[in-house]
Length: 378
Image 1 (cartoon, helix red, strand yellow):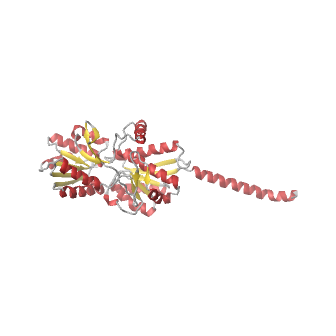
Image 2 (cartoon, rainbow, N blue to C red):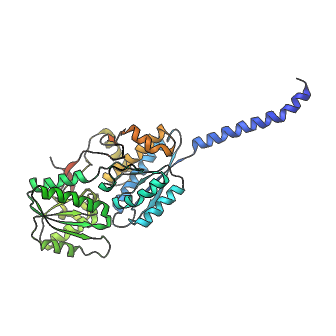
Image 3 (cartoon, one colour):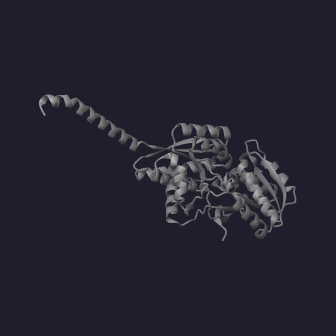
């Protein structure tokens, strides 16, 4: 090849060299581009205990992951939104996260907010995985909603049997917050059916909507005027604590059973002696000795300054389910199928096994409050 030919080819060689370099550079940038994950829950108001704990569990999971190199060497970033326990706010938060390009959303933390979000998730084909939603209304549906918490029907039925057979309660009154109707009404329905099937009687089902102007004395006074052996409270932790406090002030303490929504540390903080002896079924054992959970509990306390509860542990599990699925298939559009096909994931306290609808079963522990702590009843 003569010098003239070389001179003619040189610009072409330089162009293709530049093009190859640019392609490699862009591929490298794409490989290192952060994976965006959304979190949405109630971070203000009376349900903030659940939302903040869930958020912190996800933060810890992401920090642990990024220290180990992220997902296939891509770091994970978290976009956080507050749903304020309001359906319209929740939908707007979800829309913002989807528009920001998240691969999936962890949330919501209450059943009513998850119910409000499902239609949007299905339309946009974006996976949502909830750490704590337990409404039965989302069970057995082929949708883009998954959860690491079981539907509440089993716990409600077991609680009814325990109240009647073991606690000797024949007549029970019920107080439930319709601000989280998807959870409380569903739980109440299954409890009532099971309790009456055992021979018990529901004296009254008293509804209310949680808010700053609520008079807990009126709720407690109304219930104590009835001929009742015990009380089922389906409400957030603060409301449950306040109702029990008013029962103590009135001097009409009675046997109390409750749902899993209320058993965050806030019930111990605000309830004090008034919540001693309440009974409930739960998925979370704070004294679990599984090495992975022990390390998580220690790291969580060091990072955030308070003890991990069920919301933070289940949020940590939710995040790691997403991470493992994205490691296997980095395409967010395939997350639903990836999780469903893999089915079994490692959890902090036990294996997580999803069915074809993204629902899960977990062991339930009969628990109480004793000496200001959550304890498993042997």
